[in-house]
Length: 302
Ligand SMILES: [Cu+2]
Image 1: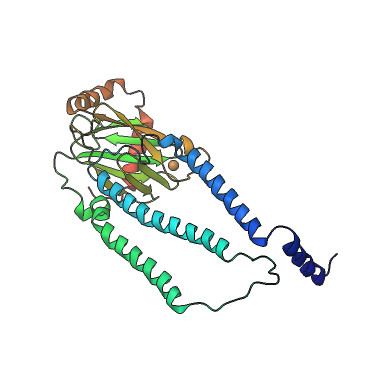
Image 2 (image 1 turned 45 degrees about the vertical axis):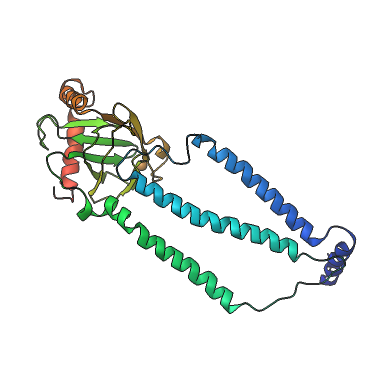
């Protein structure tokens, strides 16, 4: 409809007569910041007890410390860059009577080197700084010794449930009194818990938000992880129940793939285990078939 010439003269006119070009941009930024604030407000409302869920494991504080260090660094640069963005928009907006195109300028080598190498160095520093904590949580050779105090759980994720097995009153695997539960995990406090993770179908992710443990389940592999729940004068965990979540989008009922972790005293746990073979509603063929499947596909030598 209109020739390029028309468009150019049109924009020139609007610059001269009505709003400055910068006004639209600033209006957009104000709107954007306002909407971000509303979303932020809405988003943090469920976290009225703090941003992170209650921490209950021996390594949770170290992970949280890393989280806040990274949050401080990224938060600082986020605020800095947003403030500069708005500042430059205002400072270099078109002045009264100014028309025509923006002028281009050549880049600044020093600046480009700075904004490449400073973030790279910060990332490298974070990578080195977090290695110890990461190792404590994830490196098999840094796991606690698996002695007789260790509590072992075989875990199978399947669309869309969690199945857990523990050795039963005799303390031995693959005997008749092995206990199976579905979406209910019973664990002790103040001693290591080892979980052996398997999936029957697709990728799932075993996430204990309060423990700060998250591990993908990979078909064809048995992955060993560990945690120790603390119960002391600062942390009261015994007798309480915490969430187990699948953190991998694993199918159309993924969001319903939750389970409960019950932390129990040693006496309560022993009593619960002893009771299971009489009261367990989920006994019989299916649990043994799944456990047989677990055993046959296990890639972990125990
Ligand atoms: Cu899942």
